[in-house]
Amino acid sequence: MEFKKYQHVCRLGTQDTEGILEGNVIVQPKIDGCNTTVFLGDDGEIHIAGRNKEYQLGTKNDRGLINYISQHPEYKQFLVDNPRTRLYMEYLVPHSLRTYKDEAWKKPYVFDVVVEFDSGEIAYVHPSEWQPEFSALGIPFIPNIWEGDGKDLTVDKIKELVNSNMFLIDPDKGTYGEGIVIKNYDYRNKYGNIVWAKVLHDEYHNHASVVNKAKAGNLNVDGGIENDIVEKYCTSDFVEKEYQKIINDNPYLERKVVIPKLICTAWKTFVEEEAYNFVKENKNPVIDFRKLNNGVIKKIKEVKKDLF
Image (cartoon, rainbow, N blue to C red; front, side):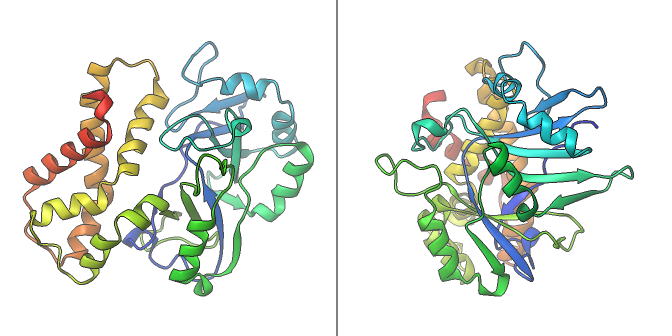
C-alpha cells in the first residue's frame, strides 16, 4: 500500500455537500489537530503520514507521532489482523484551539477506517464495526455523538450538537469544541465524490449575519460584495487551517518563507473551494477579483498578526 490523502471535508450547505443528509448519517466532534494516516506498507512495516506526505524516520516534522505509534504496538496489531486497511486520525497538537485537556494532547484520535481493494477502490468501515475493538485495544478514537435519519438533523439539532460538543475540552479553559463533522457512508455528491460535511462553531456563531444576507440575495452592501464574500468564506478557521497545512509539513520554516506561501496557498484554496459557491449563491455577480484577493490578504494579516 502507498500513501493516499484523506478526502475533502466541505462546509454543510455548499454544492459539494448537497444531499448528504438524505439517509443514515452520523455526527462526530471535530478536533483541531493534524490530519494523519497510518497504514501497513508492502514491506510489512508501519507507515505514518501527515496531510500531504509520509513522515521519514529522523524527521522533526512529525512532532513526536512516529515515536508514539512505535510505542503502541496495538496499531500494528490491528493493521496486521486487518490487511489493506488505513487508519485516518487527528493528531492533537496545539493549533488555534488550545482549550483541550492536558492529557488529551500528543495523541492520535482515529476518525475513519478505510479498506482498499486490489482494484484501487475503497470502502469506509462503519464506526460500529471498529470502535468496540479500538476500545478493547486502547486505541483513542473520535466517538459518534449522534446517529440517525438525516431528515431529523434539523437546524436546531445541528445548533444543539455544535454548542454541546465538549469532546476533550477542559471546562476550565473553554466552553465549546471546534465544531462537528457529518458523515453519510452511502453518499456521493453530484460530482461523484465521497465528501463529508462540517459545521464550525466559529463560523456558525460569528458569521450568521452574513449568511442571512446571502440567503436574502443582498450581499452588495457598504464594503462591496468582495468584502462580504471574504467575511463569509475567508474565516479565521480557514486561515488557520491553511497556515497549519504549511507548518505541519515543515514546522521549522522561516517567517520569510511562510508569509508568501500562506498568501499564495490560501488564495488558491479559497478560489478553488469557494468560487462556485459564492458565484452561484449571488446569481453570477460582477466581482473584482483584485479587490477579493486584497480582502483575503487583509484577513490573513488580521488573523496571523504575529507573522506580519
